[in-house]
Image (tube, rainbow, N blue to C red; front, top):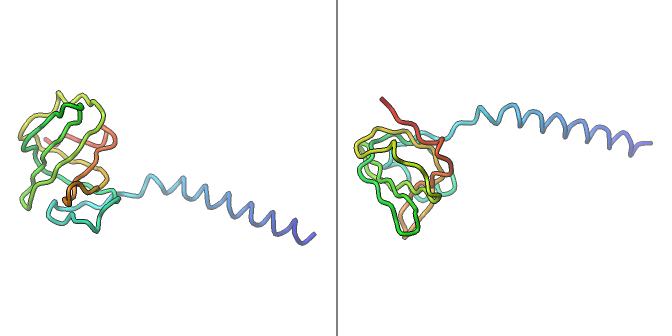
Length: 121
């Protein structure tokens, strides 16, 4: 009898917790940082940066690398899928949300979804 009560309480608590996570997950915003603030302590974190595109490089493996600059520094933003970037040009002001990674000892941002890049007017 006591086990059934504990099981019911645990089940109800779990359901309430899951519903709470679902409701609040949309409210969690990534850290908005200046590029100079991004270092190895931010690896695997979602961050948001705003800057302009200094250069666009397409590799042989169809990876796109955007070099983004703000008034503090520059950082590479890597797009692994063969993304349609025709709407992006050099000097375009953008806001990017992505995950910080490290490549050859330097931080970079991995753009996981093209909807995470916004063109600013």
